[in-house]
Image 1 (spheres, rainbow, N blue to C red):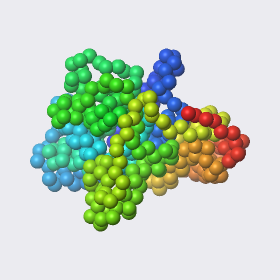
Image 2 (image 1 turned 135 degrees about the vertical axis):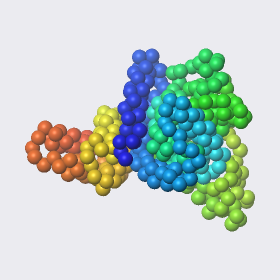
Image 3 (image 1 turned 90 degrees about the vertical axis):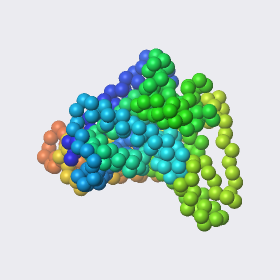
Image 4 (image 1 turned 45 degrees about the vertical axis):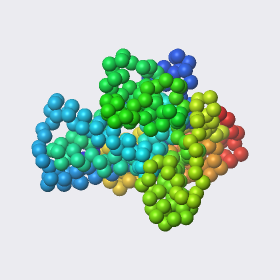
Length: 410
């Protein structure tokens, strides 16, 4: 099953685009990427990649059952059916995306992606655990039509990569005919806008014609302020992923009427139960927006860059067969990966607990990798693992203690 995981092949291509954007920012001296948000976005994506395994299992078993027993046609995969499937995926996704903004519980799944307060390829990586699971609750109709589950899963991955390319400020408005038909970075910048006139616009990922047809299109004019109205105020990937579920739960608990406790989850985004204070939408612009930029531990950038590289290696072991890990080892690897990215958030927010947690994680991860790969004999690889672990432990002891110097990032 792992051989069909299209995300294993898309990941290195996405990394190349990220490196190109970083280089462009450096050469052109454009401050479009902040280190702390970029690391938080990247870490969130590494963790969320572990859910692709669950999604893939669901697709092949649930979608497979529907295709085997209820399909109307049997559509072979070729050039024309691939295009047709891409258009069908895009149409379904338009509605999934729109409902993700218009229904509270679906916004809870989708909002982590919008909580980023800048626009670059790192933001495209800030996906949501539950968004991935929710999206595939809607594509099942394509199996009934006659598309095979493996083809749906693959094309959805390609569709997601197309969406990845929209998350940049380097590409200006394009030639008018292109802007009329296809979703461009300009259109998607609007979609991420928290400016009043940009809220809930431009849902299309491949074609913008759906927005033009269904009245949700908005052209980019005023400079876009990015983010969400109720920001989680953290880099912690757990809180980022489940922040709005907690908001809804608090509304449900506080609602005076029992019926409102239930329907809060399914009402339009922004609806507040009866008897609770109502809120007016603030007019946020690039001039008055206050972004989340807490102080981080000083001397942490080199360490976090190394950890990002190590996190990619660990993630590849979890989502593929590249290291030959067993299923139980992959589950433990996924746990270690989440532990790693949670600790990143502790470093980025200068949390007192990260000193103990990161030292313990470094030791556990080093021994887990040695055991998983059965590296028991003296070798360059074993020496390298111990050297990396020793460096990480030394750096953590030296710079991430509760009283270590902090670095303002505002």
